[in-house]
Length: 93
Length: 383
View 1: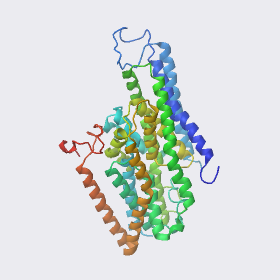
View 2: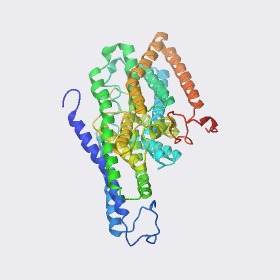
View 3: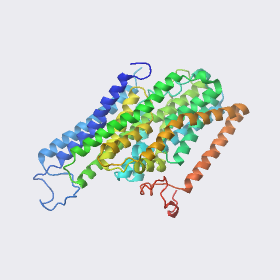
View 4: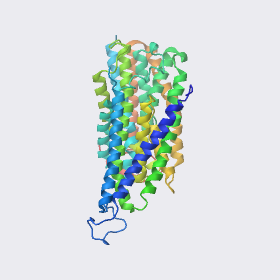
């Protein structure tokens, strides 16, 4: 740490920023892709969907479960983050 | 003790908080509105509510706006008032031109200018100003752009096997969450700055002890002012951010908002009260850099960066001028004359803005190089 730039804070902001700011949306994207895996539970009969269909659920049970786990991790991380900020922002006297 | 001037300062501070809200709606919601993830009016309502909640989330940086940057011993109610006037005028002018400039810098600049006019350059802590305000302001858009570009690249990479429709649909849902986080972060970060200023005025007026933290009514009023301002929607700034900089698709919108929320919340955790505007703009440029074939309109970005450089000194000059005038007239009358001029200028800027209106109905019109879409005169004016 020098007088002008707090390097310790800077690298933490960059690294944690990348994990939370790029990693969490990436995990969301993985969840979406898992959810879209094709499978038996598909609502539409196979072959009727068009290439620009915006259906999110592919019907694969495994995909559904992995997707749900991804979304839960994202939500838990956000919840924990808000809780941590609340804790730090209301110091006990 | 001067309760009349104190009341005027508190009202002016809440007005600043209001301009802070509507100037910055775009930071959270511009990309969601541009991609159609949220209808414009729902977006500003959601953002307003979350700004209100965010204002209560953390209270640690509430008093840092003036202490640490200027010598608080020389501050009077007139100094605070003149500083707020500088911040408000700069916020309104940049809103008129649709430039997303920093409300925080406008406030800091205004207070520094009026302090210098009152007590000279030695009353400003220049080292802290550079290390706590100016260097973070230069670094934060770069960090936000890096995070947003990485996020954008990852999102397109992960979702490339999905159909375009499903991808767009899915990330539009994700954007609601990420935009909500930015709104929350904005309330936490920005509402506290006004709380700090009002608390400072109360301390100066000896209405509360010198070590007091923000009283509850101050927290509630500031939360309300910023959320009502947000709900009014600074459509001109939203348009520049959402349409002017980069043509945005929903994965880019989600990446930009996530990057903004993470960088703002982390930085305030480390005690840097940085500008949400700088971060949001950096993120949006980052999503343009992270997607192959996307175009960043550098001319628009350059105009913003120029405005950022001028924000601190310009608000400082207005703040100094407002102090000099109030001081020359003297007493309560000086502050009241300032207030009359401030209201007149604000009214004039509002009148000019009405002549090239941007609202929820034309905010997403094709970007043709101007803030106000070409056909605004043909649109019926809605309140």
